[in-house]
Structures are given as structure tokens and as C-alpha cells.
Image (cartoon, rainbow, N blue to C red; front, side, top):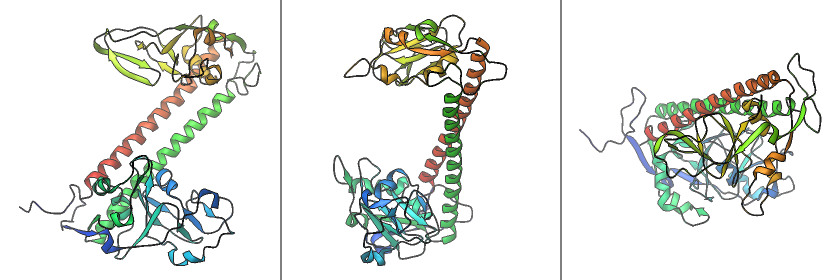
Length: 399
């Protein structure tokens, strides 16, 4: 058995040959980039496009379509004649040579380059393969763990990391000899990317829907009734102090408790689990110190630390409705500290808000937003699952 066989753990059926391994400098040629800053770019006046390193790091996936609207144009008054031989084309690769974290060296593969032309911009290293590669293969290989592990010892800098052309040219490019296998790999990752994009769009749409409905189903600008209401409700909402509808309770230290199955929450969310509860009824968590503008819905039983208040409903009010109401309060406006943000019980009690006079209206509103939140959570989990699948494929489909 050949233990030195160059092949990935996971392959498409029918492909068994060893993979090739060549230095980047032997099978790529470097192109010229420019050093244009953001001030030299715009999104309104069509001209030659320019790929900025910051967009590679933040906005673009492994494969970049040349028609992407997030690629800015170069201001028309600039002379670009010296870059005429560096216009990019399908299959070209662009590395980001600088970053403030471990994303330095992230690469994109350019596809579907039509008019207007595209150039490679500030802090980028553009290069062109000298041998044919299957569409989509390089963009995914160059962002795989297999390749990025080669980059780590080549990165320089402390606060700002960078990688050089001379360092890149000695990295190894590993690829199947068969172009068909390369194309199958590229196609697989393209399909995964489409599914991720689809769920990202659905998730963003649901979040925007929730945000819009929060503005319309609750009164705003001092009005006593919301813009949209459920059928059968016409009475004006009543102004109340939060202290009239919610009881502010203090969190406590948990370190004397044993490990268990009762969740402990802080201002950043779940921390650990213990064997006793502080509350056996659902509540709303709001920061006493630290993060004060992120209300949390706390399902009982639970425990909260001393930097997190937990608020329970008073009278006949829906705690779920009050949770959505609290998402509309500009909490940072009530910050009482010049240092670490903080809130007091007195301040929370004194905040005014409008609530329905009919408990049934509270229930209908909270039920609607609860269903939206469940849909948001479902799509978030699907998206995270797809991203994990992609990560696993990047680890297993390359040598």
C-alpha cells in the first residue's frame, strides 16, 4: 500500500489518480495592482471597477462574480492607462496581502468578467494561472485549511498582519490532474454557496420583517395607538411606567452552587448550568452593568448573575409582549455611568411606555412575534449547519 499517495479523504466516484503539487510561482504570473484608496472609488458612476482588499476580507466569498454590485467603480477623472495590461479576466486570483486578523491571505477567484473592466486594488496581490484549472477550483482550494496552514508561518506583523509576493510564490498548489474532477469540486462548492446565500437572504428578510412590524404594531412618536392593529381592537393604548407592569429583580452570585441543568445568564447570554434556580417563572433579562441594550427572554427555571436584572410581569400582562416592548426602548439613552454602561432599578421603573388596555391584544401581538422569532431561529440554525458542512468539505476534499 502506498502511504504517500497524494489524494484527499473525500473524492468523487471514478477518480483515483494522485494529485499534482506545484509551487505557486511556477504555475502563476503576478499582475500589477493599484494603490487607490476608498476616496478614489464610488458606486454611482460606471467606469472600470476596482477590488479593494477590505472587500475581499469582509464582503466577498471565494468566487467573485464580476457583475457583483458591491465592487466599486474607480473615479472617472483618474488616469488608468498604466494598468491597461493588468485588466483582470475569468480565472484570475486576487489575494489580500494585509489584515488585522488571521484572514490575511484570503483569496478570491474572479468569474464572469464582462464590461466594465476590473482592476486589483490597494493591498492586493493579483495573479493569473499559466495552466488551465476547472472553474471554481482555485477559489476554494486557496481558502481551504490545507492551503491556509501553509500561509500561517509566512505571515508577518503584530497588530497588522501581512504576506508578501515572495512568500506566496513558494506555497504549494495541490490539484487533481483531471480537469473534470476540478470542475466537480468547484460545482459542489458553488451549490453549497448558493444554498448559504439563499438562507442568508431568507434570514435577513425575516429580520427586516420583524423590525418593520415592531415599528407598526407598537405606538410611536407619542401616539396612543399603533399604525397596524388586529381586527376588533380600537381602544387607545394606556401609558404606564415600566415599574407598574414589571418587577425588577436582582441577580446573585452563583459560585456557591453545584453543577446542574439550570442555566445561568449574564449580560452576554448563557454562561453555564447550576443545580438551583433563582426564578421559576419566565422573565426578561436586562443588563445592570455592561451590556444594557440587549433584552433577553429567560425561560424558567434560570439563574442570573448580579450584573443582570431579571424582570417579571405584574398584574395581567404578557411577559412575552413586554419582552418585545422592551426591544423598542432606547436603553443607552438611560445609561447612568460615564464609564461602564449601567442601569438602576429606579431608572428602569421610571421609563414610560404604552400598553394595550386589552390583554388579548397583548397575546396576539406577542404570538405573532414569537412565531417570527422561531422562524428566524430555524433559518439561523440551517445557515449554521450549511456553514459547518462547507467547512467540513473544505477540510476533506483537498489534500
